[in-house]
Each structure stands twice: as C-alpha cells, then as structure tokens.
Length: 472
Image (cartoon, rainbow, N blue to C red):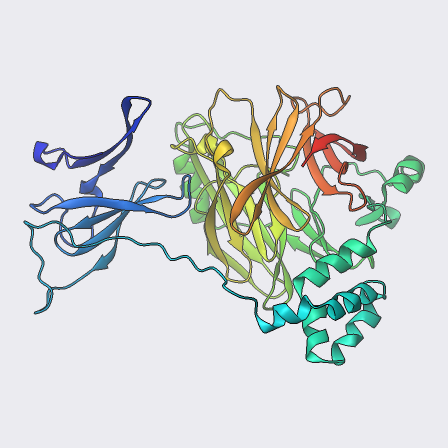
C-alpha cells in the first residue's frame, strides 16, 4: 500500500507491507529531496509502479508522475533521480489530473535450440577428442588448435579449460607457499611451507615484521608492508616495489577538520598493515598488473564517520580520483575474472545492510553487488562477521558464526547466490572463529572435503590443510 502524504505538507510518500495479518512500514520517501527540474510537491499524481534491480539493498523504487516523468528512489543512498522525461508533443500531452501512463515489463530470453557450435561440441566424436586432449601436455594440446575451426572452438571453450585444469590437478596436492626473508635478509622469498617450517629458524628466514601477502593473481603475488607494496613473481624471484602514496597537505587538513570531536579508530586487524588495504588485480585489456591501495584516513565506528582514498597504480601510471561507493571492511578482497570484490563495512553505514563493493580493473569503475539475502542484514548485537573469497574460480561470500563455529559459504554463479558449503569448525583445536580470523584459501581438487585454511591471530600466522566436516 502506498500513502501519499503531500496533502499534509509533509512531502513524504510511504510504502506499507501487509504480512501476518498486520501492516508494517517498509519505506518512507522524502519527495522534497528531488532537485532536478519541477518539484514533486506540486499538484500532480505520483504512483509507485514497481522495483528495479536485484533483491536486497540494490533495489530502487520506480515512481511515475502524471507530468510524464519516471523517477527512481535508491533505497541505499535515499536519493531521487529522473530516468525518463517525455516532453509534450501534438501526439502526447501531459495532464496533472490523470494517472501516469507508464507500466513495467520484464524481458526473459531463453534459448530455444542449440547453436551450431554447441551441437558440434556435444557430438560423440568431439567428446572422444576432448578426452584425448585432456591427457596431453599443455603445449601439445594448444598446437591442435590449428587442425580445424571445430578443434579451435573446443580447445578455447571455457568448459574444456576447466576440465583440463581439473584433470591435470587430479592427483596433485595443493602447494602451500609461505613468505620469508630473502637471501641475506633482503627482500622476500617464497618457499614450500614444510621446508620453511623445517629450515626457517636455523637460517634466519622468519619475518620480524608484519606483512600481508595476496593470493596468486595471474602468476604474481602482492606483499604489503606499512610503507611499501611489492609485486613478486614467486617462481623467478622478480619483484617491483610501489611506495605508499603520500597525500597532499590539502587532504591532510580536510581529515584533521573531520576528526574534530571524533575518535579515529585504529584497528589492529590481521589482514591490514597500518591504515592500508592493498590488493592486486590484472588489467585484462593491457595485460598489466595493477596495485589498488585503499587508505582509511578516518574511521570512527561510534559516529559512523569515515574518510578513505583509493589509488590504482600500474607500472607506468597512477590514478587517484577513484572513490568506492561504500566503506569496505578490513578483510582482503577476492579477485575473479578481472574484478576485485570487498565486503562493505556495515558499522560505518546508517543502513544496517551488507553490500559487496566491486571494482572492474580494466574499466576503472566501482559498483555494488547484492549479498545473499540471508546475510544481507547486519546487527551490532550479532557476533557474525562476513567477508568475500574466491573459491574454484567463483566469487563466494562467507559469514563466520563464532557461536556455532561454522562457516556458511555462498557462491555467485550465473547471477544467482546459492549455498555451496558449510564448514564445521567446532571441536577443532586452534580454529575457533571467536579467537582467530579463519579464511578458506582453496578446495583440494582431489577431494572436496579437504580444505586449505589460513588462520591469523594478531601477528601470528598458520596455514594448513585439514580434513573438515562439511557438506555441499
């Protein structure tokens, strides 16, 4: 039900929901906040004709007016925006006394038959060729793209690439590498976890300062300290360092003005160094790795006031004028197919909802992605924390329940969230979610019940493989 309260000089429109034999207020829209063109407070008919967007905090209410305008109301930012305005012509005249002449419809495109390529790839002969190619070394398999267009389509198809990766890792144990000091104590080095744990103390390879290392991104890792970020190729030892961005005096003065009367909350989080959240991505167009540095200059959970800056640094360029739509939490992002994802920080938002913040590295654009609906709502009394991870090439969301000692992992596939795994940590000594930050790194391709986790408690780090009680 929609209540138009403009006649009461309030400028408000309310949307009510009827459930369980009772009415409850869903949304309250302030029409006076519309600053584009004509005022919405005048004598005209306004109707709410539907919603736009996915479920959760990404929804927008669509309003239509008898003046020939369509306006959206963003439920997250509480802003009004005109998306359509039809001018009067001899064929179309607006009339404030008649209801808006707008309606909504939804397109649904469904395949009615297979394409020629899909039929060719599903033939019995192609299936036999695929099984043969899966057993060849990578260099030999790619040479067979020259045989025919059909073989080219097969070898370059996403299903073949996934099958080839799974087949060639069938009997291979996941290789866990740890970061230690480089030769002579200079730089860093990567070594198998078993070797570093065995030889590290005797050879002085243990780190004596806090660092954060990213997951591999197209053959590279990012190692971050308070002052610098290092782009490393763990196989060859090649590295390139990036200094932390020094911001101008004008920005410092602005931060000091915002801090007046507020407390700057400094979190000693396991996955941050100083006030920096640095991560690694790949510009797919330029085929160039870039470092994304996000700095919190102010973070006050009590007043929910914050100020952050973002820099994107390549080998030959740097860009500063980028701003995430929402504050992000301190957990590392997930990188999937050219896009970085962070979980928002609901403690700094007026609306208690979780949203995923995305950044397309190639387009240099931030966007928002809805969370799974069961974890979208956040309460300051709830002990559950949530973060995003990449598992099996897909974006996953993982709420951690320290009371039940469970990780409930959701995956985003074909634009839809589905529950992928539930991991039970209760009874596993050293894996308490209340005392540690426990992050799934990967699933063993040989056995889905075998997982690799990273466990951080303050500056202490443990990485290990365990057989967990989990279901898919």
